[in-house]
Length: 313
Ligand code: NAP
Ligand code: GLV
Image (tube, rainbow, N blue to C red; front, top):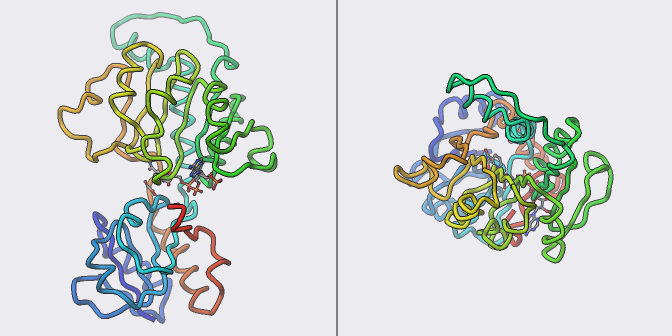
């Protein structure tokens, strides 16, 4: 069995070593133009040439949760695409979102600014019930975030494409589904967490019309993709005061270009696409397990994280 590795922006050697150790019978190598045909690809944002020169692939394994960059390529019809299924990302995402919600709700950002200015100031405690959190996307990451926020007694709303039963981590979440229930979801929420995949349906979904429907003093946490947000609309609603602030981990162009108005905006907290990192050891183990299962004849449908290419996630 031959495995080819083609991950833009990723140091290949530790991944190659990890895959070789986990799949001792496999021939694992770094892809370069003209490389021999492989059975499986381990990829992140590969060039179109990679796809065009590997017609024998049985499956592509994406070393991230989001497959938007991969699905922008022309893929052969029927090629299986498998994304990371958690692999240590959901706990990181829960940490990140909880810190952003709590930092805003408890006004730790303002306390830090006061102390930096030499001011010892108390603020009146705010009511948790006044800060219902809405999570867009109730998949692997969104469900874990919902569970973590509920541990801090926040009221949690959730929105997804398909309706969700009230079980497991969503047992106490008020769930909404589909476009027709989006307005009710937004108006029930003051803090908005975006954990949607980037697809043709969700691009630009955080715009003036949708963000205006959040409760006054709304707060946006975008940890999915920058292209979900219409930047000018977000800025206008921050400046009008309808939104109190936002924490942004992802941007339409990354790295965020010098001179972009987000850099200096006083109501924004920015991080460099770091809310949930791909963890190499967990990811290698998961991908190797799945390749081993396919090679042993198990059906693709038995794997977690198989992408529905027509839906885009
Ligand atoms: P997932 O398990 O596939 O969950 C996606 C969720 O979004 C599902 O609940 C799905 O609804 C919902 N959804 C999709 N299209 C929708 C639509 N048109 N309307 C309403 N809901 C829709 O994905 P995941 O593993 O949680 O990851 C989510 C995203 O997080 C990734 O795609 C990636 O972009 C982002 N991410 C960011 C970072 C970072 O470091 N910033 C790290 C990892 C991932 P159904 O349940 O009905 O299918
Ligand atoms: C990171 O953004 C991912 O999609 O895994």
